[in-house]
Length: 336
Image 1 (cartoon, one colour):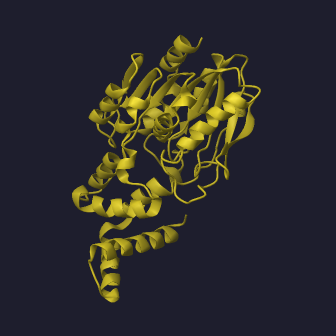
Image 2: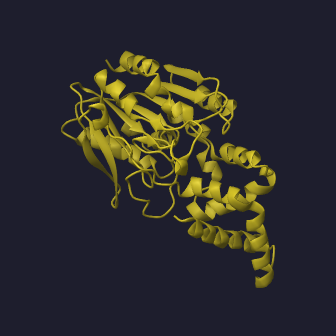
Image 3: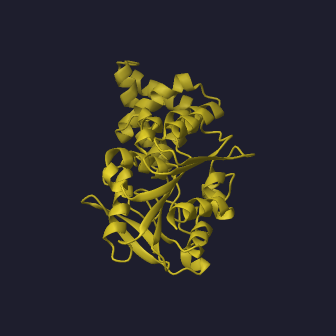
């Protein structure tokens, strides 16, 4: 979506907010108030709304072939009208890891080293992580969720950051169990940020789909309210003033409430061994939020690891590509 279209959408939604809150009954006064509001909230509101509703489709810069791995392009059928694109990386074993990515990333990672997608953590490249797993004897199944990478946008518009994408998690499990190559395999999962939220929602809605999933890694489950409030504060905007406007806009744009993305109410649906990983000083969340999720896990076999010495959330997304040892130890101990 272009900047012009984003601003047009924002203007229309701001008009709805102003109308509902009675800020101006006269249309001309309403238009002036709307223009003042847009000027007041400016690009910060636009950026946060865009990122939570219509994240960019990032280019796929690398493939498993670049690291010497054979792979197949696959498609997952999500419901009746959506197909998302993925990769299957075969290995000579009966062990399969399904990997669910973060937003606005993809099955490849995220081109954070490019100016257009610049991120303090730089490029996020998942493929060395796949390579480490593959070398240890794991098959890999990964895909782009709707509105990300090479997959189409959602048929109903905005992404759901887990509240729609849980259907892709279910579709990946259905694929794994029905595909001739993978139907006999043990399944583990790597669920990252939006992918983690998606998996947690899926566990709540479709618990039977996880009855024979052996374990998961859960990286950085997020809460939108905390993330957006911290985002506004970092831009010098008062969250108490701006959040009601953002919430109304978000509701109108996506059909969801901001608090739909509070994963603490989903954590007790996790019934499989879980390794939680989080950047301790992550500037977009609170330590207590992740601790609440960890403490609510209804399994005895669980582990928590804090990544230290950085405020950058994206560092965790790259971490196991650079340091695969704990990841391999976790999966090997449960899936060998």
